[in-house]
Image (cartoon, rainbow, N blue to C red; front, top):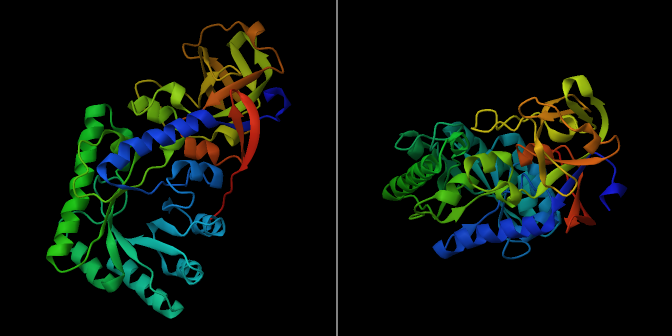
Length: 371
């Protein structure tokens, strides 16, 4: 029973998780694409296995620790999708010597040379993708930049392909805008791959990835694989983008009511930002969900309640419009569940998932952290 769990606790609805994973497979496989799920949100073997066609299929990681952890649990094909630096090469090299195929990404000549030199010193060849900047959001080589061929020359035989992540899709305001961003994302990597091939470089892998763009992409022509991650759980940001509905969100934080402030129309819980994170990803969307949308113990949103503020160990729950609450419905000791703005940030606050089947805890799955 939920009443037997300590609070705050991270809950995971297994049926919703499996439904979300199956939905992404149905989206990707008809196009002949490799699905390489990003496991930075999950950080769990059990969650990741449910996202794959095979228990140890290809994955994307964002920390070397993730690569090491998943290797120790049987995974062999991994893309480390953060710009590579030389001092991390020995750990990747060790995994390579143990039988892993860990590919990396670079977006500069300096980074490419450092990777090749450090790999040679370690006695291995570590394949690398060139990161392409498809949206001006973060890192990468701008399409058609001379730097693309310069980086490719620096990588030499280590060049594996091109990849991009359209993170700017999280700031789109309509499904049409996401679809347009997806087309821009695709064109950026496909054109870059064609430029490399024209110059004599093999470019077998053309990789795109963000849950919004993969969900609404009008075409995957020229793409070989997709990397998506948050779709396993979904969150309020995804719901605000139209990628999912509230009922698709598979994780929540279980909290106890620890007090009231009647004059302010507040409920006080024991789930502050240490349990929820400080992420305010919905603040620029049409519906601002505060620090999280409040549900009853069965996961159903109630009374238009949100977490309007959060201290380290205290969450302040109020109506979205600031109006009065029937506090008798929420006595001290009663349970609430909070849906997260950003699944990655909220899950990162916890060391385990309490897995639910029909709202009953049935298992506990380890979740790890670190770099």
